[in-house]
Length: 120
Image (cartoon, rainbow, N blue to C red):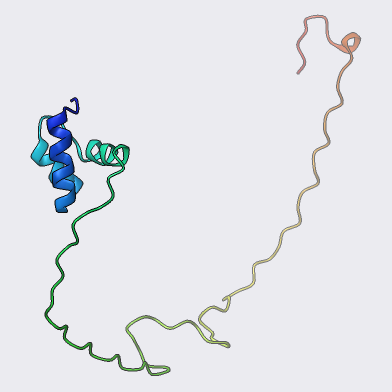
């Protein structure tokens, strides 16, 4: 895909009309992607776009929120309170003493190795 002068002019025209990059890519066709359009727009330093038409109809006023009530159930489970027995352990596990660590073997000198070279 190469940017010919005709494509660049069409890109400028569609960009100032306010079309999105994906819409412009669809109109240009022939392998032009949305990212290619965005890159070309940035390289051409095109910034001005047509403003999007806004609705002039008045909006309906929002319904004010009702204040939440403290302690009111909202469908979620509440956190356990202090003194709750649900999280208390049922029994106390007995701790077993740790076995004594096995001492590290001392390195052997070459003269202490057996003649066949095997250390068992």
